[in-house]
Image (tube, rainbow, N blue to C red; front, side, top):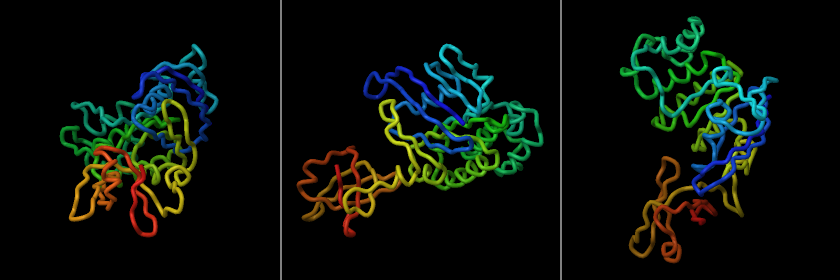
Length: 283
């Protein structure tokens, strides 16, 4: 069990705010941390890792990591941290990165096999693709058999195909090692595929906590489904108006009324919903 009761004053996207999180996470659970940029997601991971100071209490499997003024140093916390940036040493081979953390060669070879890196064990980072570098980073994080695996948008720089492959490898490692995992992500499909629970932060506070279906598959009224997107363009085509909306990595065209075209602006966040087979925009 991971108990998090922590507070920290932050300067967020909308000014000063208080990060205040009170959560209990079951051992072996995969939790996605979602929310707008500046809501405190990365800071929460850094507090758990001991990279930032905060007030409160953090206890994992009976071990106290934070309690008031007492804070366990980073090196004494059994964590694995996977960042957006790969943070690899240019002069080390793939295998050397893993053995630098833990000299257990059998474990290193096992991790390389799971992530299909065995044939690349002697290569240095300069000769690896982005996906391969992130696999090395993931394997390195697992070398100390962490109690807690923290991932901060680890796949955001990769193309969709590679993201999908690495998502499966992350899930395989999570299940095999039984590690409690917290992952920051903005990708709904990634969250739905990997997480068993989603915690949404807004202005430093938890505003939603539930299963991926409960949090991500929200509908209003009689809509069949809806997605959040960004208006990229509004153009008049003959006698109608068409809005081009980015939804994740997809672009869709939605027919809108002259009145909607008048009030929508480029860059505005909207919901694209389907009702009676006709897409509608909701501000």
